Amino acid sequence: MELVESSDYLQNGHKKQIRRVQSGTSPRLEFEYEIADIKQEISKIESNLINHAIDNDSVPELRETVINYLINDAEENSINYVNRYNLQLAQTELTEAQNTLNYLRIYASGLPNEDMASEIQRFCDVQDIYISILQDTVFENALLVQNQEFLKEAALDFSPLYSGKAQTLYELATDSVFIEYTPLPYEEMLPRNAIIEQEEDIFMADLNIYPNPTRDKLYIEYNFMSYSEEGNEDLLKSLGYEMKNDCASGEISIYTIDGKLIISKTLEQQSGIESVDMKDYPPASYLIKITDCYGFTKEQKFVKQ
Image (cartoon, rainbow, N blue to C red):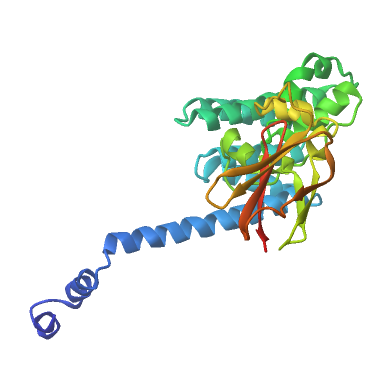
């Protein structure tokens, strides 16, 4: 590097490139980082533009400008199609919105990720029904009733793309209130099974044990009521869970810290307080586990003095 720096032959640009390589940083990698930063900034600005265009009812020209940008300049991806569709709905341009859904279907059919493609296709199916309802001059729920089971399945999919809309349409079809559930927004459109995995813990039981540490009696307060709430039986079935036939409510199991089962107790009620006598067991750390009739478990450590 001393020879490089003192060279009269090498130009400053050459010296700069050699310094980068010498320091272990690839110029190509640096350029890729710069491009990634630019793309991130573009995405941020696009999101702000779209949100402002949808919210600003007093300036329809702004929505038109953003729609044209999404059509002509933005990178082709599923998010841009969905944004364009939402803007066209806000403009009540239903024919254009339907055309965008058709383009989105074609785009989804070419995706290598089958789960993502399936989710986008179902989004289009739900929105097709919604647009048909908006196009009717007189509201009739015949189309909703005809697609009642499909809307129910879509509402239970936990997709941030379409579950909320499907839930609303299902309520209109059945003149009822669906189970209370609002999907959280996701930055990326994930496969449904990946999202479901994040939602299953809503069925975890409540567990509280005391006193901890204990000398003799250990009291276990539990509650399995979450899965018995209205609508959750259908939801659990859609996730692939079935209640065990010979299960009353669940069971309590206590293990030594090395995994040896020492106590097992069947629960007859979905909630309550049970007691376990630990007086004859040696002082040590133990693990208590409660399991409901669907197989959901919750664990907690405690100490016997």
